Image (cartoon, rainbow, N blue to C red; front, side, top):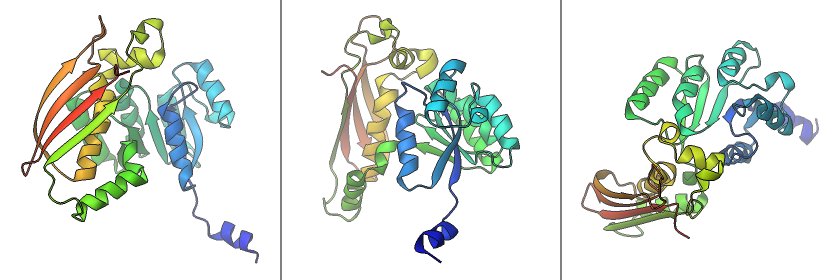
Length: 267
C-alpha cells in the first residue's frame, strides 16, 4: 500500500459544515472559512449565505457549493439538511447580531451543532433562552471570539499563567478603528447600516462590535474575573444612535484594575 493510499484510508472524515450569512462582501464569513481550513477538519457543503436569493446563489456558486445545497433561507436550510443522509453536522452563523438567536434555535432544535460568531444574542433574555435550547438539544453550541486563536495571544496567556509577569495589578486593553469616523451608514453601506441600528445590532455600537473582543482578550489572557465596571459611552457622529467610542474602567476580583478603550472613530 502506498503512503498516499494509507493516508486516505486512515484520514478522519471531515465535518460537514453549513454557513448562515458570510456571502459576497461580508467580512467575518471569510474569517470563519479560513479558520475551518486550518486543520482540514471541516468541509463547507451548504449555505444560506445571504437574505437576498440572488446574492445567496452567486455566493454559493463562487464557493463551489452544489446548486441544491444553496439556500436563501436559513430555516429552509435547517429543515432540509436535517433530513439528508449526508446533511450538515454543524453550522457557522456569521450574520448581523439580531439574526443569531433565531438562526441558532432553528439548527439546535434539529440536533445540528452551532458555531456562532459573537455576540451571543442582542439581549440577556434571549441569551438565557438560547442556553436552555442548547442544553435541551444535546448539540454543541460554540461562541467564537476569534482573536483567542492567535498564537501570540495564547503565548501571553501561558506566560501570565506561569507567573512570568508576576502578580497583575493593571490591565490595559485597546481596540481602535476609524472606519465610522464619518456617517458611513448614510451611504447605505450594509456593514455600517446594521452596526449602527439598535434593531439589528442591539444596544451596543462599538462596545458590542469590537469592545466585546477587547474585553474577551483581557479576560482570556489574564485569567482574571471582572468584579465591576464604569463606562463612558460616546456617539461622536451627529445623529448616530449607538456608541462609536467608549472608555471603560474595570475592577477585577483580587484587586487588579483595568482600562478598556474601544473606538470606531479614531483616525
